[in-house]
Amino acid sequence: MTTADEVRPVVAWRLPDLRDLVNSTGLGGLVAGDGTWLTLGEVIARFRAAGFSDSESTIRREVDDLVAAGTLDSYLTRGRHRRVSAAGIATHLLSRTGSPERGLHVPEEATKPERSPVVASIVTSALGVLIGRRNDGKPPWTFIAGEIEPGESAADAAVREVKEETGLLVTAAEREIGRRVHPKTGRTMVYLACRPTSDKLDVFVGDEDELAEVKWASLDEVQQLLPGLFEPVLAHLQRELRS
Image (cartoon, rainbow, N blue to C red; front, side):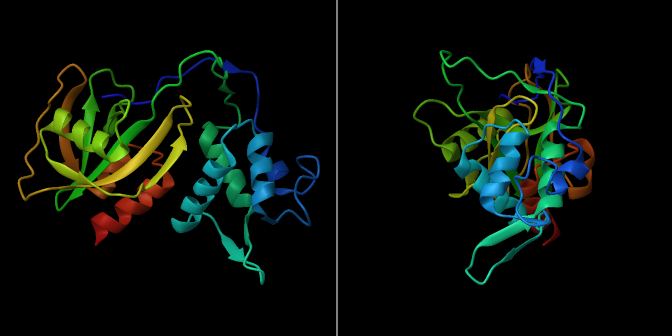
């Protein structure tokens, strides 16, 4: 199992002050009008100015996920074009870097092999959501996760990882909860909803080198043990565990 929480070397870059991000003059006039609402193009410009190199399609998905989760205000114009809150985007950019004082990662060398994405299995049942306690404490608690192997789909990888790490048989959803570039490691993370295939919900540690414990956690408990949950994942858990 692999998680993506190792801190890489950083460069001495600092995110602009939140007030600058909201104001139309804060980033050299990148925001039209008074800066309260942004077009998608202006959102992409904000990401670029903040030092992120996500593709436009990834940024678009990230914005869609934030809007769907109710954590980013938006509205549609008469021409059915979306506008999103500048303050909400500023807050999101701050959350991705951890704090305004934190630097960003040194980009990978272009000659290095591309690392496989990591799939995080968000397994829910009547008992809660499945999490594991790591032996190395980096981070202390995690969802069941691992690299997607060559030729393997995210769904197949999620099912395999859960079986290997906990002994539980699950099915994975066909559509992702969301994906992002991890704010601490720069690894591509894919979050996938999973459900047990039967009422047998007993779990055990399948890889004692990686995990010290696996268990079902309530919504309140998982928010305490895994602070700063990715917003679409939190919204998914709120729907699943409060229903």
